Amino acid sequence: MSEKIIKKYLPMTETAFYILFSLDTPKHGYGIIKHVEILTSQRIKLGSGTVYGTLTKMEKDQLIIGFSDGDRKTVYEITELGITVLQAEMTRIDELYQNVIQKRGAFQHESM
Image (cartoon, rainbow, N blue to C red):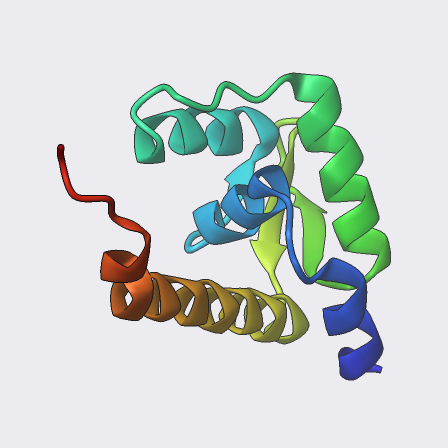
């Protein structure tokens, strides 16, 4: 099952990546939004519809679980499957980065 889910999510959208990445500790939706803003120096400002739509999809696919915090808020936590998917995406990104570093000179033009 995990291979099927990995193929479904990779490559990840930036939104999906940062939502999963922000769940290093359990957070509610607003906490995720604020954490992503901090991580990206305000470059990404997620709307609540985008966040909750993505969270619903991820919960259905068992990447995260949601539970009540007692104050009528749902707190989300990453699952083992979610960690596996996140690690696969980080490996993919690292490969891209390493390939860019190795080939960077091939695409730089000398100044005239």
